[in-house]
Length: 311
Image (cartoon, rainbow, N blue to C red; front, side):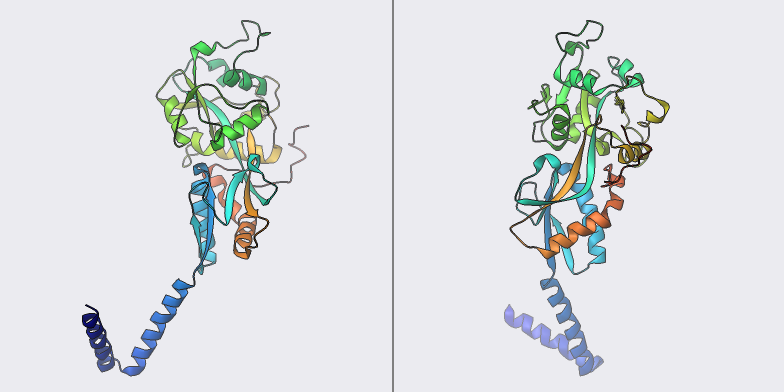
């Protein structure tokens, strides 16, 4: 077989020599050799993260590769060793260098066929009411204040789920889990569970509960709007849940603590020096965040607008 391939290669070279001449053959072979060397010497950056951020990572990677064609950015399985990890602020570890590259926000949702939360959908809910919905009623509440847990079904995931981590951090340090029907697999299955159950209530990040094309709430669900200032009523300027871009703008400018939000951070091991990974992380921080909104994530805007910031 090898003898046959060698013979074919010789015939191929001979044809080129006869038709184009030897100088052309040498040039062509040199180009092919350079291409092969470039492919062999291609530099690779590996990055891992929760499935919830895979689309954003892939977008960053493709745009970075356009600007740096000699570098390839590969997404690896969550938990697998990589040069970088896109993590939530609840995952901080001392041995990691963390670079803020955005934020994730989570909202409660119900089926559009769910009549139980009509009042909450109209008027919004406070942080305390969110706790009551997902953690149950307190003993000192009046019957009028209570929402009977027997009338609705909570769909949740394990404490290791990205969106669950954000909600648990919001509910308080003493809360280790959310009781309800455990849904395994991708976080998107929480929304699918509510779409199939008119008594269902769950939570999802902005990229899950909004249609990323038309930027409105996903068909079939209703978002329970959270009252940003905990006044018990949504003011005109707080009625921002009907449009994803309007909501993101509000969250970035006011950073209200009443809405579940967590930083997104690229982490690098402090003990290992990787200039390629550091360069990519800095590119994401400076240039890559222009793509965050497209996938329902906030930018890393550490500067607050004094006119809008909650006091």
